[in-house]
Image (cartoon, rainbow over all chains, first blue to last red; front, side, top):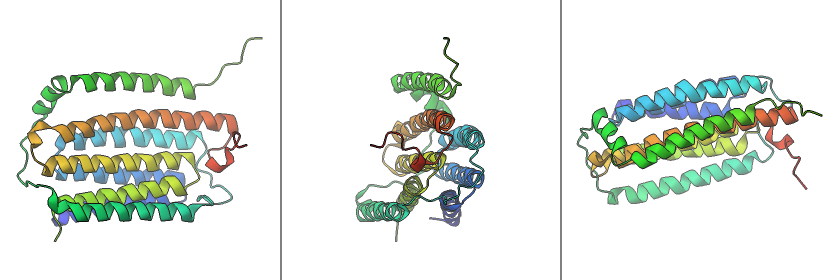
Length: 166
Length: 104
């Protein structure tokens, strides 16, 4: 536990909180980008370079842009008249707090039972590539199929419906 | 005194709770999707932390799980935001409590 971890954790959690609490949707998109960047830095801090850079590429490069596009296409920059929080916000808050209490209790009660090694794992991108086309080749193919289907599906769902011919 | 693993797991739990709260509390469909993305990211942080501090990191299990999870989350975001845009085109709103056409 060093200072870098605390700074990155604070950055990530502040980004997440700002995402949930800010009123303007565009500000929320910016805040969630900060949270994604903080997570990518946490991955790098955990010696998972490949996952960290994949996080930057996929989340900051693609998902954040997608979110901004969706906000602009749905005119989300206009503030709604009756508030941004739902009528049952208190119930949602209670559920979230209860979930965090259970998760935190489970982590603190059981973490000493987990064997822990602190040596830095010596894993290169080459090892990851070999594992991807070796042991994990079937999940890789399935993910490729899923991404193709999701791309086509997203385009078809969001496409303008043509007028039906009479 | 907490171990580094417990620190990362607590951060992930807090981020999950924040995402869950956002998904439950906000009225805009896009913010609900962002909350779901935050929850998926918290799960990824758990996977990477267990990969780093668990036994046999050279087997790459947790790392691979996180990478596939990132790919699935990207597909989910694309389809989800496409659905939000389609719903907005039909109902002219992205506020979830106004989309009640199927309410009995």
